Image (cartoon, rainbow, N blue to C red; front, side, top):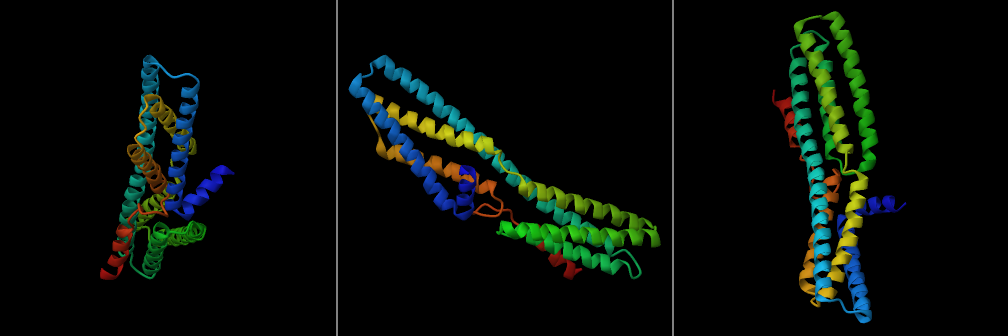
Length: 265
C-alpha cells in the first residue's frame, strides 16, 4: 500500500515527491537531535564517546553515500540502455524499409507502408508521457507485426529471392529491437534497493542529528544544504527511473529522422 502510494506521488509530481523526501529527512535529523538532547540531559557524553559517535556516524554516511551512488548508477544505466535501443530501433526500421523498396511487383509497397506505420507506432510509444497509453500502443504494434509477417510469408512463397530473404532478416531484427526497447522501458531500479536507500537515509540522517548534538555544534545552514542535496539525489533516481515523466527522458529524434527519411527517399 505504501509503495503504491509513493509511486502514485512520483507519477503525479516529482517536485512534491522531492518536498516529501526533504521533509522526512529534516524530521529524521530533528528527531536524532532531540534524542541527543534528551540523552545529554541524563548523562553528558565524554570526549571518547564523542569520538566514537563521530566514527559511527561517518561510517553510516559513507555507506549511505555508496548506496546512493550505486542506485544512481543503475538508474543511469537503464536510461542509457533506453537511449541506445531507440537508435537501434530506428536503424533497424530504416534497414527493413530500404529492403522493402527492393521488392518488385505488387507485394512490396504494402509491406513498405506497414513498416512506415510500425515506425510511427514506435515513435508514439517512445514519446508518450501517459502510462495508460502503453497498452494500446503495444497492442497496435503487435497487430502490425502479425500483419507484416503474414505479408512476408506470402511474399517469400511467391518471390523466393535474395532480396526477399534480406527483407525477412531485416524484419526479424526490427521486431527484436522493438521487443528489447519495450523491455528497457519497463525496467527500473530494483524496488528493494530503493527502499533500502530510503530507510538508510532516514537512519543515517537521524544519526547525523544525534552526532551534531553530541558535538555541541548544530550547523543548521550546512545541514539544511546537505539534506536538500540528498533529497535532490533521490529525486534524480526517481526521474531516471521513470521513462515517461520528469525532465530526463529519452530523445525520440532517431525515429523522427527515420520517418522524415521515408518521404525524402
